[in-house]
Image 1 (tube, rainbow, N blue to C red):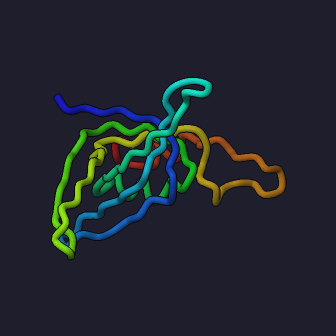
Image 2: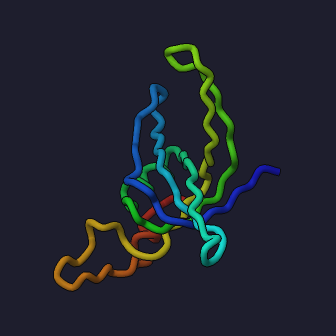
Length: 129
């Protein structure tokens, strides 16, 4: 069984691309923390999602957004333009849940307060994430 569940914050804005097949793919980095005190460290994960999940991530997240990701681990390898073998470990997300606050573009500059995400956002979407 290949199941991964992670919760953390986006390290940068999600990057969206259209594949030749017409599918949408979104990539983002997710930071999770492990350990306590002086032993605390950050792990970075490469996350990839497709189609409606990708569209929702693009629309409702930004750098710093807190999300929970459920998916599977995938290992890829390829040869770069110089013939060197490259490797990438990524999480293929089946589900992305939005946690915490809205993206920074909805940050209230006057009060330095972020409005909590509303249930309406999730109810408007026709996708499980």
